Image (cartoon, rainbow, N blue to C red; front, side, top):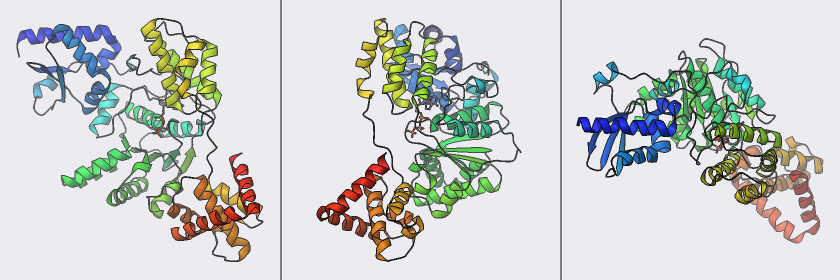
Amino acid sequence: MTNNHQERWTRVKGRLRAEVGEDIFSSWFARMELESVESETVRLSVPTRFLKSWIQSHYAERVLACWQGEEPLVRRIDLSVRSTMMRPAAAATARPVAPAAVTVRHDPAPAGVGIANGHAAASATLAAATPAAASAHDSFGGSPLDPRLTFDSFVVGRANSLAHAAAQQVALARRGDPVMFNPLYVHASVGLGKTHLLQAIAWAGNAGGARRVIYLTAEKFVYGFVSSLRTQTTLAFKEVLRATDVLLIDDLQFLQGKSTFAEFSHTLNAMIDAGRQVVVAADRPPLDLENLDDRVRSRLAGGLVVEMGSFGEDLRLEILKSRVAAARSHHAAFDVPAPVLAFIARSVTHNGRDLEGALNRLLAHSKLTGQPITMELAEREIRDLVRPQEPRKVKIEEIQRIVARRYNVSRGDLLSSRRTANVVRPRQIAMYLAKTLTLRSLPEIGRRFGGRDHTTVLHAVRKIENLVGNDLALAEEIEAIKRELQE
Ligand SMILES: Nc1ncnc2c1ncn2[C@@H]1O[C@H](COP(=O)(O)OP(=O)(O)OP(=O)(O)O)[C@@H](O)[C@H]1O
């Protein structure tokens, strides 16, 4: 590599620094090095996989554009993770890492509105995301962490206060402290903050460096296990997992494969028995996880199970305000009038992701046109995010309770093996409603009705379907139960 290349690299870094600001530059690019320049390809390296994937997903185009600003012929940036084994000199001349106190903020590009301190109380005790914590986490083989997802940026409201408090407790515990809830199981529908909360625990838990906290998506757990089987290093994989103080598993509903379940079950048991903390997030309660065997399911249900409910309007408004504040730290001209924020909080009711999407559109508009955000503009921009009210989600237990009450039997009767006519018909109606009003499969419904076979459920569903076609009174009765369940 020539001096010429190095000089160019210095200028490219200057451009990058000017574009993203000193904080972001020192957090993400300070340890990036030029490896070589070969005709149209520039090869760069970073020390960790986490840095690589973060830069690739958030700054790839920007790095390329900065190179092209210096050298128009460059077409491709090839980013690799450099091995410290191969380059001992690199360690000796290591550049200063960004100071631990730097709060990493997200690139202010329209695609991502950063998040500001939404919950001031947490910030005094829980450290913010730092590259140091990220690379520690990365070296344990965890899934990539998003520096925006910290306790600081997690807004607390009625829907999530219990989950938040439990998560903080886990994050603040010290090695050797008695484990209070194990496992901590958090469930919520899509986009209500499960990943945010788990990653906040990972950032805060790893910040002090005293404990080993690993965040893994279920997908990564499967991948880690399968690839360790392939390379015959399963023992090493197990050892890494079992040597962690806190294991965070996200999206458990995606866990796949019989041997992976067995491995998950061993890991869970080994960790809990050794007094180490496990935190699991999923989109449904443990009892509804159809793929797991009963022992794992009951072990998961045996700790603290917390549901995060849907956001109320107040919480939505607070989340929006905190995001506007974060965006303003990059783009000071971004001002969303209070009535517009109130309108979004009232209309975009679905989840955190839609709220983020709504604000991103307004931010993009503000950046690209420089025009003020008006109510008219907001109504136009977020029209497709305003969804009609979805019918309330119905739980199988509720169906059983309401059907039992209406037909004057007990819920226990519905689950029992009794076959008297006064119990058989309500049981069939309840199974029919479970199939038509929930997304549960036939085997799952069978299990929830006292461990019955799926063919029994199928028979019940068909039976009631036939009856309602001919029996008006029964059809009306079932409609009334449905209305009661949807209220
Ligand atoms: N309480 C909160 N405070 C601030 N932002 C939140 C909160 N809850 C959710 N969000 C934001 O909403 C978006 C979606 O959240 P997240 O990815 O954590 O949801 P999830 O429950 O894990 O969803 P999925 O089931 O799809 O995995 C993220 O941008 C997240 O930061």
